[in-house]
Length: 215
Image (cartoon, rainbow, N blue to C red; front, side, top):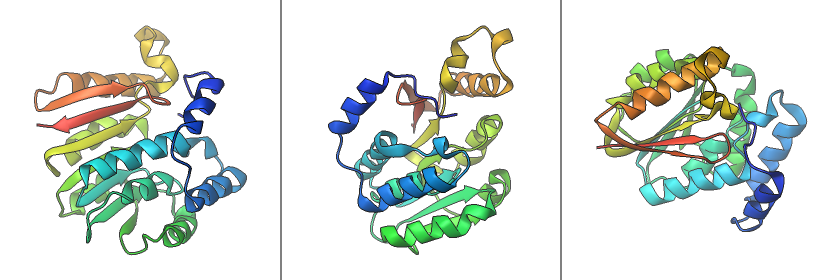
């Protein structure tokens, strides 16, 4: 889910007044769009800049990402890591592993971004770390489960970000008109809203990002 909900001229203007995309990210953006099926899933310049800004503000020791795709968002978030910190990113698509690793190395984060291939629900319990920042951008039907699996691994005051929480606007439709994916996202949004352990806001950036702070 990547359809923008904003007019293109406003996106173009926003990019004009956003720090320029780093050459390594521009190269990854270009290769993804030229060679990878589903390239529209790439975070892209504006969302990537937001993730990088959040990471710089938090200065996380450890970051967890669910849904690597071609590595753009992982590289963006890695810029804010503390010295000696790490980012663990999980994806089920092993065919993209080498491409992702090549761009991680080109960006200077080889050894700091750790790639995991497998189902997120299987990999998360094996990670014996506390995370300051978690980014959920995997299969939408799993969001609620992933939220439960990562919650105790998030440090107090840490953040969970969840992408595509507007689901191209489908979440505003009557439930009988929503697709299966939209209903899953609606259930996740309701779950977060009713959780007294967190403070949250839905940011209408691109396809919507839920920003969740663990109290």
